[in-house]
Amino acid sequence: MYVAHLSLHDFRSYASAEVELSPGVTAFIGRNGQGKTNLVEAIDYLSRLSSHRVASDAPLVRAGADQAVVRAAVVRDGRTAVLEIELNPGRSNRARVNRSPLPRARDLVGLVRTVVFSPEDLALVKGDPSDRRRFLDDLLVLRAPRLAGVRSDYDRILKQRNSLLKTAGAARRGSSSQESALSTLGVWDAHLARTGAELLAERLALVEALRPYVGKAYETVARGATRDDAEIDYKPSFDLEGRTHREDLVEAVLAEVERRRGDELDRGLSLVGPHRDELLLSLGRGPGESRLPVKGYASHGESWSFALALRLAAYDLLRADGDDPILILDDVFAELDTDRRAQLADLVAGAEQVLVTAAVAADVPEALAGTRFTVGDGEVVREP
Image 1 (tube, rainbow, N blue to C red):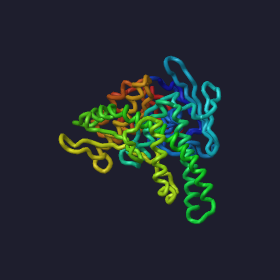
Image 2: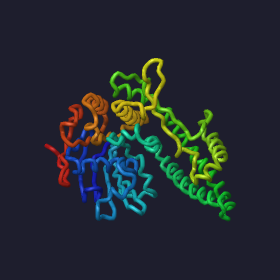
Image 3: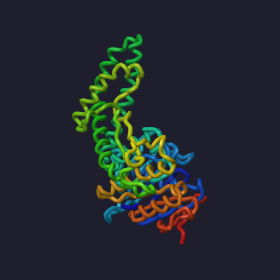
Image 4: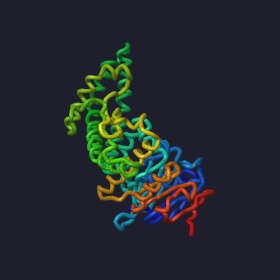
């Protein structure tokens, strides 16, 4: 799989841009602020319908414009499809494939697959649990695009249920609407349990599938490490007692919701479900020593190695599914020491398509020599 052509209209800093691409390595070189990351961000957006840099669509639309359009010709198994997303902040986005409208924008997810390495990846290790949950869910959706709907439904249910909890909690403190709110809350408990259990079951299975790839990747990128040093575990919001099947998880979520009812009403928040779960990252410290959480104990170098291992593991898992994702290395080499630069470059050089951004050409390792574009003053110019 690779992108053969990228077309932008009012996306980020570009009023318009047309870029011809090819398989292999392509590097975009330019000073910070010139728009090189905007190019690869657009391709990644087509993959996930979200940005690795910002949480909402509004910053993706050029200042003064009402909408942005990203269009890409994607080649897969020798056949070309033109994917297009129209970004309309405050309104529904619209998607097309070969100029035919899709019923929902999210139906575009997974038609092109990307794995992004960026300086923000350090948040996978040092950031909040939400960063690690997002990592899991993004990978879930790339592997099974139907889960984009499950994820969206869960977010909607959670928002509605939290609103009801606030209302019911206030009712306990003297309002007359308590009985009605609690009755309605029971309906949303069932929705939360059913949709949450599906998401939970998928995450548990994903972590099991990802675990060996993380160990192997960490051994590769961390000097002197073995594949047993890095470990990932899924920590749910309550003890599952070994349950992993969806129907068992539905019952377990409902039972825990009932048990925590008082706490939830007091706080006006849903305290049970996959939105409260955590992906635990740990490192071994040698034979006979206990494992320690990466966050708070790992050195800067170890943290970077673990973040890289997570991305490499995601890439390897997607490849094992039968697809070769597009690899995006966004300003990542400037953050790595010489050894890790070389190791990462050697690992990804054989991918079908690798897109690299760098402030200076010297930041791009020799193993990633390929097509180069200079980005500056709103122009993307291919070097001879």
